[in-house]
Image: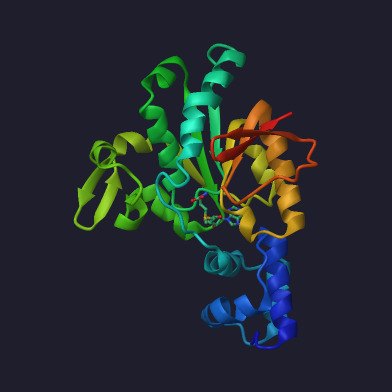
Length: 274
Ligand SMILES: C[S@@+](CC[C@H](N)C(=O)[O-])C[C@H]1O[C@@H](n2cnc3c(N)ncnc32)[C@H](O)[C@@H]1O
């Protein structure tokens, strides 16, 4: 049904508008066309105009969610780009503790969190620095657009691949080994929460509140320029004064940005709200 280039372009543009994800025709044909055809069949569509009209009018949220789950790349693992977490506990949080009023919670957002490894990596680094959690309360929220990834995050059950960068003494401290899986200890789950939110939906984003630190790693690499710019502006508006935005190692904010000051720490670049 979506085999003409014209129809494929329409679907690609719909995905870009909705999520920010920019997929070219070749990649779409190679990786996604078959899977999306299958979803369309399951949802009982038999002509493209009917399908397309339901997509753009948001008439079938289930269909849209299935397409989103198909085109999002959820690769992640615990302690990925670990230097960021070390900078968080050594530099960012001590600095914020000095300027935030006594008793104010430090709010941290992981957007996107995929299956939750980033959220738990943040938490484990905090727990490994008890002087920080003795002094302050922390709130950690993970959001993602992919509902299958979020199900894993909520269950907290991971495969060996996700654990590849976690030092063995921390594996035994924070996880329970079950056959071929590793389950995050229940006591950790109560410190974090996960929500299905699209970063392109400004209203839902702002409803999450204001944050001291936003991690947004390895999502912008899939976005088009316009969506990237708009989402950076959304993050800016969600950060408290002098809050920090942390992107993936290959992602950058344009040098000309007046929203953030770039800070270099060893091999990492982080961004502080002006
Ligand atoms: C490669 S993972 C990165 C996960 C983690 N931050 C890390 O660096 O390991 C990219 C995630 O971005 C999510 N994503 C893509 N577009 C999104 C959007 N518009 N809103 C929220 N999440 C999105 C995908 O579902 C996927 O889980």
